[in-house]
Length: 155
Image 1: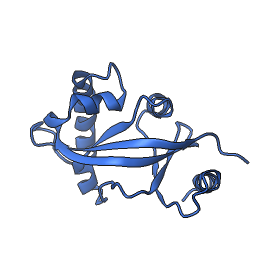
Image 2 (image 1 turned 45 degrees about the vertical axis):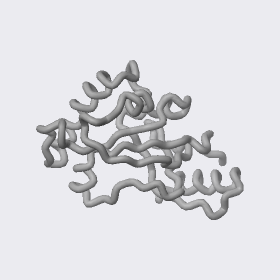
Image 3 (image 1 turned 120 degrees about the vertical axis):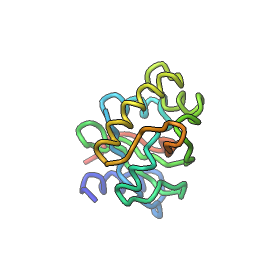
């Protein structure tokens, strides 16, 4: 774990009196200059990932396990602590308008969500070597989260 990330997580544990809190991961979002402010102001409380990316990377799916993640900004500075509250795997075409709204992007509509994620998943498919040909069967990992702590790293 990066030293700044470790210091920030220790600061969170002290400030919230949670000495037993467990670290899970670092959350570094695509387009952090846009998405991180949405998370910090409470507009973005969900995200969607390609199931096939987890398979390609041989990574486990996220879990609702009570562990905490450190959110980093565009400069890779820690800015908040997140906790996953829900995980669901659904086909692309079954992502709900409610989930699209919780993602907090654009006009928050399902139509906007589908347009942006079609482009994003096609790019990911090329990068990771999977297919995004059938929207009815392409699986998305939907994650909901809450910000449980935010602020700068103190010296």
